[in-house]
Length: 73
Image 1 (cartoon, rainbow, N blue to C red):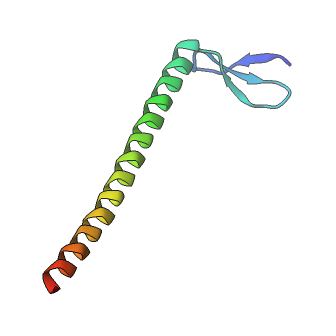
Image 2 (cartoon, helix red, strand yellow; image 1 turned 180 degrees about the vertical axis):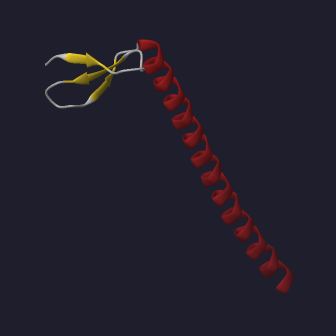
């Protein structure tokens, strides 16, 4: 495997065997990993909040049913 520098793209190389582009710039790679981790954390937070809202909605429905049954007695 030999790496050929990509014209006008610092830190990028083309693998002569597979023709794949490889980014050897550690700073850009670490920035990508950090942004990906941040997005994953944000997505997990959103999913947690959605689950809590769904649970609260169900609880409110239960409370409403109980109040209606108490009123009808």
